[in-house]
Length: 82
Image (cartoon, rainbow, N blue to C red):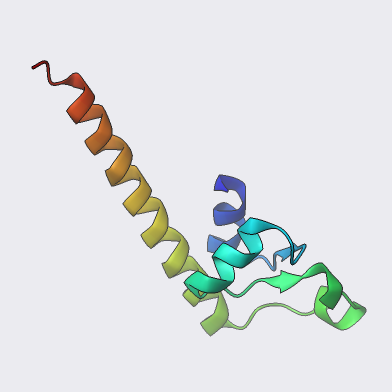
């Protein structure tokens, strides 16, 4: 998912299979992603709007920051000897 977050946070249109769990997860979180079924010349040659890019950027950074916090917390807990 790291590569997908990177692309989304950099304003790239991401196309995934609808059956892909990542597609479903990202849609549920509010990301602007597209199904491969939606690929057409118009979708491939147009860019996300500034608002769409900013929304994906914000969501991606929020999720990555949360995951980093969880990882660091797990490491801290694992390092504590009982």
